[in-house]
Image 1 (tube, rainbow, N blue to C red):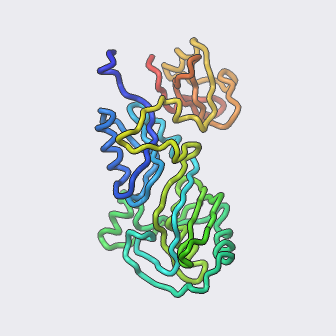
Image 2: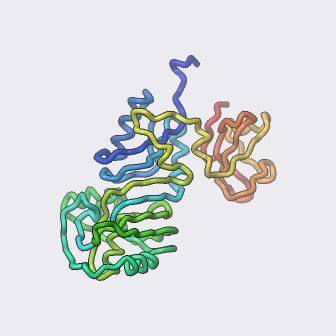
Image 3: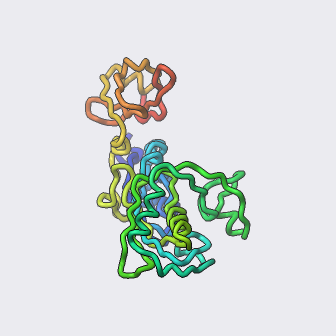
Length: 291
């Protein structure tokens, strides 16, 4: 296969700007990389900025593992105003006098949201209910019941600013956590209301904002980079051939130590496949290498 026709494959770490949907970024990346086979690892709201990991070519199949990684965010919580979207893009729906807020009181309240908590997805989110996304239902002026989900918040720092009604927030959390909901719930717990603004995703697993580039300048990295937060196991040439045919292995054949998924690489460190648990064995979830 010539260089001109060789499939582009890898991941790119993009710094999403405000005003674009995650799908808009994917559309731009398709032009940058010259292929329609581009996907992303987790939606960011149009007004949000920050780390968005793209998969290109067969590496799009690796995005399922990146979606599960913990996330880090920073933003601003505006107390005293609730909005229809829980962030600054919506209309103000209620106002409260929260002039008695104190940094110590806000910090104490934020502490109650650490650990595992229940969250209800906002109506303006991409969650599907009976095949339809919530934001589509919201646009029609309707609201439906949404089942709560368990998420985990490992860090929730709230830092006063020059404006007594605005606090900076830094959050480390599990995948699937809505920072808008966290801000709104914090406002409610303090006897009023709040909304979020200037949300920025500063990390996805070990992928930080310092690595992220504008989509027009982004660089395609090797597929193995997608699996750097998981155990990597080097295999010999005979095993490489078996992997290329999707072979299921006994656990002691590959010598994995940590919990899966596991990235299997050749002697050069190139990603061959990602394997996952299959009872007492391990089986391929994604095979990258050609037979």
